[in-house]
Image (tube, helix red, strand yellow):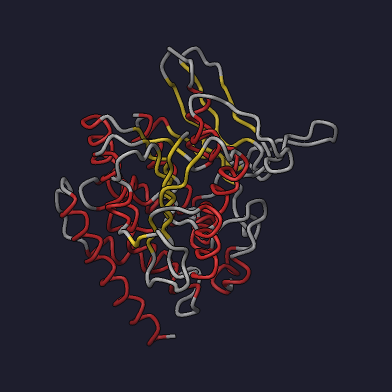
Length: 380
């Protein structure tokens, strides 16, 4: 029986992870659950899965006896824990991810920010302590699935992007986009932060950064192509020119289940839980070049990531503040780029070789981004 800790248990990925756990009652034991402030749902999850440990911003009342509040950083290191699902948002997942790897745990990584912020450090911990990073994000998971059993080298990674809800919107109308419009993703159902990142394609840049570190592929050999149907999640071209693709309807439960049972593939007892590719109807697979002028955040993010050091941590923190400000109506949609660009430009380079360096850069960028947002608010 696999013993699992789920960080971000009340969010979209956390809930879908528990859907998989629920489908295999004899395969998993939930040791710990960590959430933000959704007390009602956390209380229900604790009552159903009966973990011995929980974590949240402020403890809910009326919990089942025998459950202990334990910080995430400690929960992931508990003896006997086999796998940690990191489904938090922002920098909150970095320390727990490193702690889990240091204890030799398998880390099912859905939260992009830890590896965006600290790719070299995560890979160092994985190598030094014997833990394993299991990609859950759909595009890196697709690449991971495609390279299984392949002995030859990777020639190119092709990551697909739906293009988001504004793929065909006139550029002059982008500044007037509302949060409600930006949250209407055409193919995926996700949390608000990642949905806005998908609209700006910052999310896709983060996936390029993820893939660069996870699969040791050079920046030049990773390509992004717009694929509106979101049926192909990623492709891998090998040395001989052969291309493998991982396909399926937009669903996070498949990459979650693949990571939790790796290296096995298991059929879920509930056939309705993971949708299957429908071949009985006419379908198209379209590919279109990405328009850089439509997605300035994408180019900015990759330029920043290539600089290395603490720059990626600054990028991640600035984007988190900017997206939250947009969702609250404090800035406009196109201001997200302006906030991030301003913070990245103001950053004084540091090595970013230690966790302390990265957390310091994250804290500085968060404060600087709030300052920039405040100035923009005064001008609106």
